[in-house]
Amino acid sequence: MKQNQPKIKVISSGKYIPETLITNEDLEKLVETSNEWIMTRTGIQTRHKAVNELTSDMAYKAALNAIERVNYDKNKIDLIIMATITGDQMTPSTSNFVQAKLGLEHHVMSFDINAACTGFVYGLEVASALLQTKRFRSALIIGGETLTKIIDYTDRNTCVLFGDGAGAMIIEPSDDPHDTAYFFNAAKGDLNDTLTVKKFIQMDGKKVYQFAVGAMEGAIVKILNESHLKIEDIDMVIPHQANERIIQSVSKSTGIPIEKFMLNLSEYGNTSAASIPITISEYFDRKDVKGKKILLVGFGGGFTWGSSILQL
Ligand code: UT7
Image (spheres, rainbow, N blue to C red):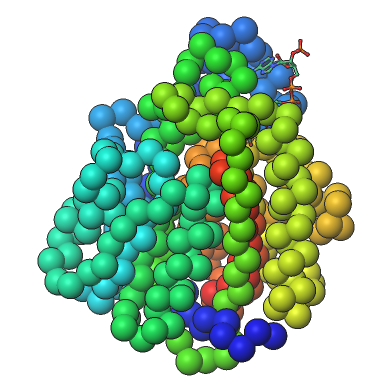
């Protein structure tokens, strides 16, 4: 084991999903596609759309959900990291807006990061490292996106895949060795626009698919090796929710049974940086999660990819 793995106490998790639904049948009216194609190629049935809501509104509601789940004293929070590619505006940061909406007027360090769909795992590693300095006592990490504002609804290659939402987690520093957290995050710069947002999301789906399967498999193997844990020690794998077939391929290539992967993409589609924390929050909804070990694994534009093992 590496000497300086951070120790963090996972306090709570929350989510917010906007009400408005976009069904496969709705998309059939916009582009040449079918419910059958979308279901069999992606596993997605519906996705949600933020109407008159900003990324910071959803992020604030996800944070509030995490705070209220455990009746947390929000005034303890002194670090906010927001992972997003669809911030409200260039500046101030969306995390600053969340800070204001939460009414946190005391000293807080607050900033956004962009690591596309891996953003939440990146943010968690950054927050954990900062907590390790003992100069912060509580970190709020949020992944939130309004991807529907950067979707070209005439492009069937992308418009069926993405949706809006936000997920949040609160962590504190710990001295308990049981709270050791493991991280692996990586990037490989791409100058070929394989997965890019200029005005709208554009991608070479096949290339992204191939990258995703290899990156996720590698990230799972790497984090299990680093932690000296076996997959049997992990209670739930929480993958980035991009495409059910990608997760099935990773299940096959790693030998991890598909039942061990928590899936909700049929309902939400791909919510980029929000997908992992939304899924963690839904894991928290199961009442018996204290002491469970979860393995997070994601990939995204950049390219970026990463994994983490946390004890709840
Ligand atoms: O968070 C990361 C974001 N990106 C991803 O995760 C994307 C990863 N890639 C994928 O999930 C898959 O590659 C897609 C779902 C995007 C596409 O699935 P595929 O099995 O790789 O399909 P394909 O790109 O090879 O396309 C097969 C056919 C093509 O038609 P032709 O050329 O064979 O005539 C496409 O034009 O399916 C066509 N097609 C569609 N047909 C109906 C592409 N999109 C659609 C659609 N409805 N929405």
